[in-house]
Image (cartoon, rainbow, N blue to C red; front, side, top):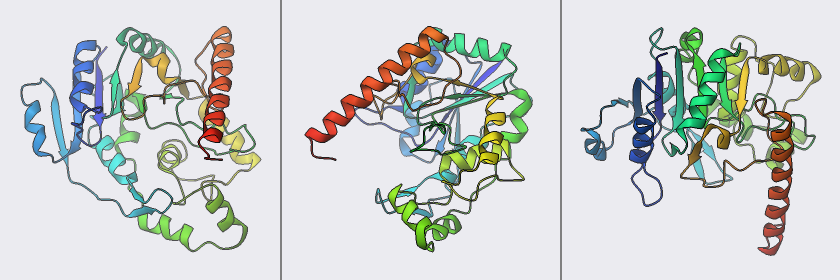
Length: 293
């Protein structure tokens, strides 16, 4: 089986975040016949010349979507460009992308996940982290799966390759021009664009020609039913179960009780939920002690 790994995003060379570590962990895993770093121009890329990988330097589309809550610009189209440009159609049985601030900690776990995925009837492989559980009333966000890991079979190459560019300015202005209760909802939930990055990717993967959502927080029974049908095409695996870690967010792989996954067996699900609940309680106590609430 031929597998391709796309390491996607900016080139990091910081004390605690190293894209070179991402690349080395991929090479040492011996899981991939092709490894591609899909990034943007950076003078430090010359340090990778001796590594036996493909380096794809993309034209930077820039960021035109300002997030006032975090005082920064969203990178929706940057993510899209570095993913789609590195997809090679009909060349590999399995393609997976990870962010350039992640690394493979346990290759045997990842190998098992890939093996099970390829034997399954699923088309896509995602991780649970940052995937909102739409069944929880206070979240209820549909078409929101993680961008930490995106895997897919050869049959989906063309679809992923052709993911469209988002009109970032238009979707930002849409939020800025809201009024009434919807404006209050976006302010309360800190929504800065009409669709979040993950939603934009998911909606174009599953419902390219007929978006079932008018905006990020749109929730109807029809859309929920459609989302559940689309999720049947996905294997959603906890990040720790994949053997992958984030250098930028060291605790992001921890179990969360409000995440969606469909990979664990029943005993593992029970442990996953219990650990997730304890983690949530701990975070709430910490927030109160620090005066965040």
